[in-house]
Length: 423
View 1: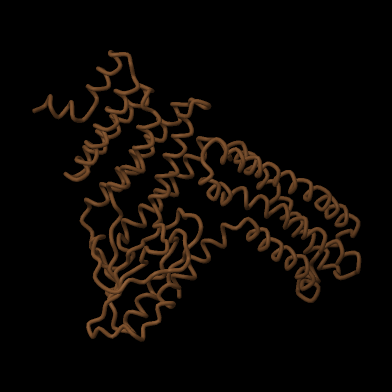
View 2: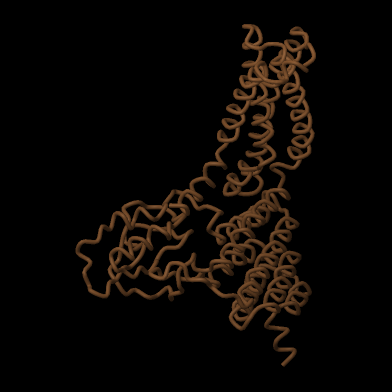
């Protein structure tokens, strides 16, 4: 239950309407609770505040905040469109969830609601002398928050939607997902090979991507029915009619009374993938940005090189993390979970760049250096996969690059060339 609520709350706070709603409720509460000061010790020490000065301040806020809020929405929409157009539509969710922009929009809307509610209450004699003073202090605080928020937001809106900022946001989300995966590589379960098919398969009628798995719920069902559950779909997997979500088995072979629907409900399936529990999605999104940058219409090899640098940082984090000795705590002993496929990660990261940048010598040189760097920090499997990608990238370049000197320079940077030279 706790795990599911945490996932639901993560999705909720990224909704564009959530924070403005919270700020509006707080604003209404602040405007009305100022009346409580009339029956407290403040009444004896509070100075007299002219009602006209309060009305002027509140009218200033109400007249300006709605305009600024509309302007903020327009700026955010332009930034979202720019991010989807110049980077990848998959980055849209990350740009929408930008904390500074959401907080700024929420402050503007909340301030407008505060001024309207407080002005109506003031006109109807809701406040006494202490209430006037308390409302005056609250209004000054609101003004200070508006000014500080505006200054911070102006600096952020100049970056929001820019290609560099979008790459940074996607890399940060992928880094966070990788760190979470390193901390819990099997989501609290125990490891199983992906090709293990023992047990009765469980299917879902819903077609889409697995976004989240409620491991606590699966463990409860497995313990109650004496089951062993082998996951066939982890977050990021596309499930369809004949793709099992999991396979279940029991030591007493009594699977007749198992409610498969309860098992299926532990899987959150949606039309799109999520960055939260799916590090491979972030890697794919980065490669999509590089592919778009390398298209003939844009022709921006510098962005592709920046993406390669991001991949180097992410793969170095993953490879070094996997080599670190750490005790994997098995919290859900009845659930078996396959690991993320490292070959798929390499393909997702480097194949699109090698394909679309095959004719650009600068991009291909950086790609070969990146693969060498990743192989240097990795184990035998990582080196072998980097070698394959290096070979394939060079073969793609051979088909496109006609200038022999460029090919000779590129070949010297290839891993297979360096390996042959050293041997």
